[in-house]
Image 1 (cartoon, one colour):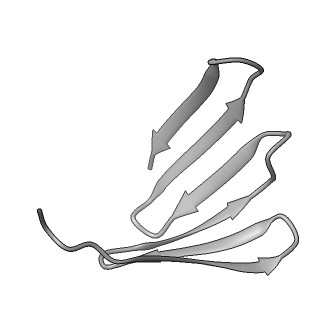
Image 2 (cartoon, one colour):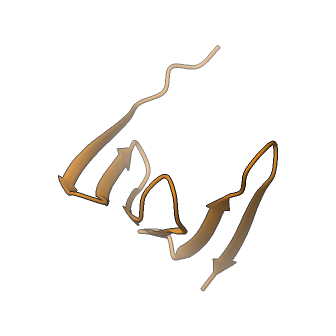
Length: 62
């Protein structure tokens, strides 16, 4: 099993900076609404947790 590195910092309420070995990303939003993530490698993800075992995610790479 390979070793991994990942760290997440809360910058402001509802804003997180996520860092791993190869990239970093900024996530905005919270538990009860849509979350938007922009990564240093060019991907954008929008995700929403719906009640129950449902969830929705859309990823776009530019």
